[in-house]
Image (cartoon, rainbow, N blue to C red; front, side, top):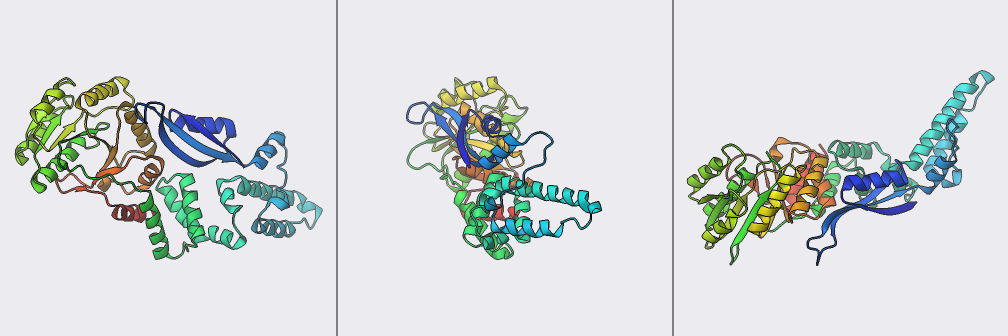
Length: 401
């Protein structure tokens, strides 16, 4: 197999490089994001890296094959025992008995040859080649196929499904035994989840900013945290909003502030935030709500960059809705991450979706930990501090449903 690594500013651009260089038969082996350049990891530009591979035998076959020609049979020596046995038995069974049956028989042979080539060149073939016949029979079992289909419906990425399957086979997990399967998958998911420490201040003031696109629930999430730390933790909390664009956004936060007895300030510009932070220097925790920004709007992201630069928060939480499409989430993370140094993620609206494959993909592809997730609109109740095993249990149940 030919394996290469590709770098690009975004995952989409890296995927285009893979497809252009290795073709549509390429198998994605690994993806990650990182920052390139800068000083000690700071101020570097965000980059995406993809490691991909392709079967060299397949590339040779495709290069030699002429348009319209019959696909060449797969060499017996390159096939697994299961594939060779299946091919031999099937080819023997369809030998033509009479001249009149010649064309149908040849059609069946060609169809079988195409199927064998597809088996060899599929992403699953990479796993099959490393297995003995008994492991292969497990992989091809009806139970395993059901697991694969369920995870695909949950939008788990193909290469991650392959990794999960190979791990199950390596540890001899029986896909037909639901309890055994669920327990193994829960351990795997828990191992991918990265949890951030809570925002509770220790012996110094902490400034926490919330950023993200419109409509994801930043203001409600901020109010839930304000209630948690002021009413339950007995901390001195202040709230600041820079969302002067949305109708009644400031009034919403001021209403929460009046109910909880928490001061609320409005920052009309980036220059206002410095004075506000100085005014509340004796507070334990200052929660800063920013206006929703489009990941496609450079001007808005530049405004956010200036505001965050002035406020210098200790933590920057990117708020994402669980109902957002996975590849839109990737774009949001990339674009906001290029504008400000995100170091936490909050997921909202978990009660509005049954599809959690995106969580698993994001945890596998990005190194940003989860700080909180919300399961409803009630303040302050519907906000959870993530715990790896409980969150893994929620995700696992959705993957196997």
